Length: 300
Ligand code: SF4
Ligand code: SF4
Image (cartoon, rainbow, N blue to C red; front, side, top):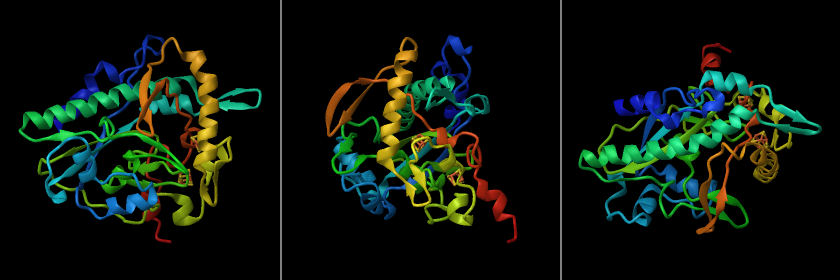
């Protein structure tokens, strides 16, 4: 998809505001394709949550016509933050006991959503112009955060990227791609016949040094909320800390931040200003690469 390359290079939405000299937010993307009838999508109902959709369920819930699940493909797109933004974000802000993400990262994370939405819309348009149907799970009316006993979404881009062979999970539960874990993700479901990307491994944590080699744990050391331990990632602790970060960063950056709408339990909520946290992703072994590629060559 050449046009994607062009969009990443030239889109004004892939740029930070003037205050940051209009710096590019994302370098060139990685693209993978999952098959609609891959049984792994049923597994995600156990792993993510019972209301997480399979591609066919999302397709139908978004008003598309019934077809065999095997006729669907899911294009997953990895948006890697540029080396410049990564470098500038390694040192967090410290205010008394609070540790906050670097300002440039919070703004990039906030602006990223607009570009990501635009790329999904453009990909849909591109496929429709070629005579196919296409939708985005994330932009669909069927997309919502489900806040019940647990907190999850009806379409997890992380899990879709895993299905599309783009990476595996880390101890911090982010996806570790060949360009690292400090990325954003998007996907489009289509009935266009596309070449499926084979997964290098069905092992969900194959790229993480902690799970593969019992080393590293740098992400856990970076997390001020103690949300990452050798037992894994605690979503509740993480979300609590993210809210704290937002309470501090949003008033400070509001004049330049973009507001987005979101649905929780299928109901629209007041607009919000996402600023992220991701302190667990900066300055760590998997920030900008798959650290297991080097280890695969280690003959140990
Ligand atoms: S920082 Fe280390 S332990 Fe944490 S996810 Fe990355 S590779 Fe795994
Ligand atoms: S996003 Fe922030 S709170 Fe959540 S695990 Fe990473 S560092 Fe911890």
